[in-house]
Length: 94
Image (cartoon, rainbow, N blue to C red; front, side):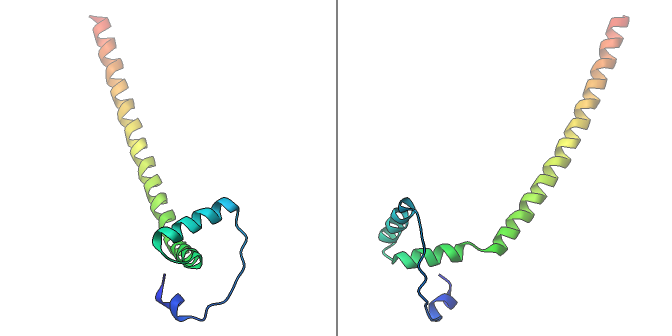
């Protein structure tokens, strides 16, 4: 949990969750020996929109690289097919 969250005045906010999610949060809290609310606060801290933007930028760069690499691969395959066709034609002419 971020330091600023610990220093701020806490406010109560009721939330609705499916029973299965409540059981999961309870289990996490029990395992970590912290409160239910602390697990929720840590989850909110972990959900950082900036890292999401970084992830999006990384995925976009990865996609661009894959597209470029695939285009280069297709070009090489086309060159190999042409060489195979030329070799096949040369062998048939003999």
